Length: 431
Ligand code: CMC
Image (tube, rainbow, N blue to C red; front, side, top):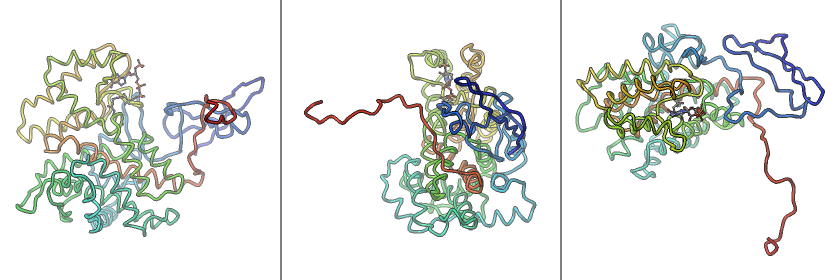
């Protein structure tokens, strides 16, 4: 942590308290309030953590005003164009881009972990067929700690590493199995001669009855979607993983907690909600009606895929995703796709509308991803599982960073209590 001699001064009840100012490598300065309660007897109040840094991290940086996203310093646009998902995984987990040999070893290791314990197949069969694949994933990933005991000791760096490999390698298998189970098709085993994204498409779309060829362009598009979702610093699900992990919980339990948090429509669930919204709008003529609803304070409707806590400018991932959507639809010969037309027109109108302009609401990563995934043949229920499997490497990188941080303590926020003060119990007959 970069220390400086600058301090901020807080005056309270005639006393002055000094709060050290810490300068990060990039981004706004941070006031260190760790000793505030001990010295001044007050807490800070920040629901939603809009002004609170809960940890120090070297993994991902976002400049919300500039619309900039860096993984370990590398701009997302460059990675999306020049890198590939497993290289990004290596980068996030290890801090630096791999040389050829490191890449080969990493790829080989991840690839050799793609199968799940055979008994897990039985575990899947306990779920109802019509379960949402996210519901199945929360359960199955949590259950990994029951199948892989030899990588649950968080104090052992080697076990932490093995757990990381297992999670990165097995999440696509688990997501694909959740999908196959939901449509009543047999599970498809991973094929280790395929790349990471191609293997995932194979496990989702192949059937034992006939050969399946993964179109390489679709594998590339899927790989790019995975890269764009790989990490996003301290968002709700990542903070959930860190908080769960701060108690010493095992990595599989922590990632299951992250998946549960991601599922919400304000977070990763927005990709499914966005495509359903675009379908509901249906035609360009109906856009004004939905824009009016989004602006109406008395209507809970929000434009899904719009707005972000940190980005007050274009989400750089949305830009890449929009371009990818055009490319994929073109490749598949899908012209005049009505959902894409509605999306583009909705974006155009919203970006000219005072309400959205003044609140700095721009399309986010979830706005265009669903269009690509739908064109590839995925049902909307698979959109968030794909987000989850792609984000797993970010969650693990953040979890590993937290575990090895010597200043790490159990996460324990305080509260502004506004409930009843102490009072005596009243017997039921006297209430
Ligand atoms: N449509 C209409 N109005 C909106 C929207 C929207 N999508 N997003 C924010 N607003 C308004 C909101 O009503 C509020 O207005 P006012 O100040 O008058 O009360 C103002 O903008 C600020 O919104 P907020 O809810 O206080 O902002 P937040 O930072 O707490 O929430 C958000 C961020 C992403 C949850 C929110 O923008 C949202 O619900 N968007 C739709 C869901 C979505 O697309 N989520 C995906 C986020 S990116 C990927 C991910 O994280 O997984």
